[in-house]
Amino acid sequence: MKIDAIIWKEKFVQKIEKKHHVTIDEVEEILYGKKKVYRNVKGNVDGEDIYLALGKTSVGRFLSIFFILKRDGYSALPISARDMDNKERRRYERG
Image (tube, rainbow, N blue to C red; front, side, top):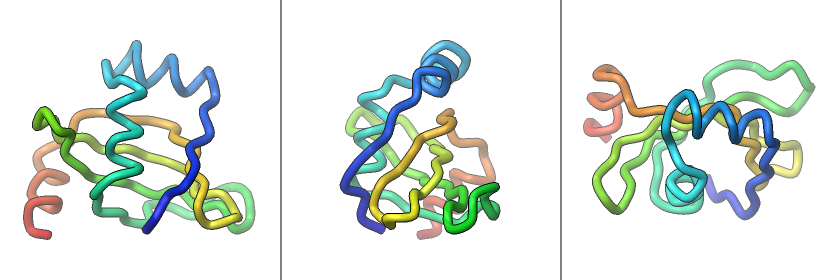
């Protein structure tokens, strides 16, 4: 999945940075770069489902990023990001 634009909302930025200690740069590195993407749940808005992106930053941090794929099919609205749990890490490494 190719993402060409990231839409930031302040309430999600604060949650990602303050609660999960993930930087905006790290989120962008994963979403714009090499990642594995899985549809997580059907969204509340028709045509805007929630996806999970699993990726590794250039400094070796394994992150899980939850985002809404907007209707245009190439814009992402990150709603949460955190370090991968063990199950996600195994899923990511299996490839």
